[in-house]
Length: 70
Image 1 (cartoon, one colour):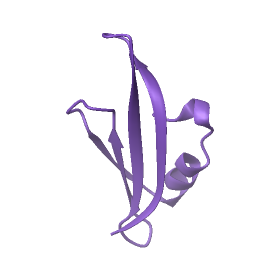
Image 2: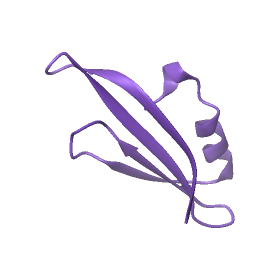
Image 3: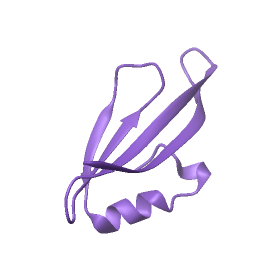
C-alpha cells in the first residue's frame, strides 16, 4: 500500500460552530484498487472507501470547494 495524495481542509462544525481541520488520504492498494481514508477532524467517525482508478482520479482532481465529498 502506498500513499498517493492527501487533501487537508478546514470546515465549520455545525454543532459547536468551531473551525476544524480534516484530512483525506488516498492509498494505492493494487493495480486498479485504491483506498480512501477520510478523517473529519477530532471525531471518531473515520470513513474508508474502496475506489477504482477512475474514481480515484476524479477524487484527486476535486477543487478545494469539493473537499470532504466523494
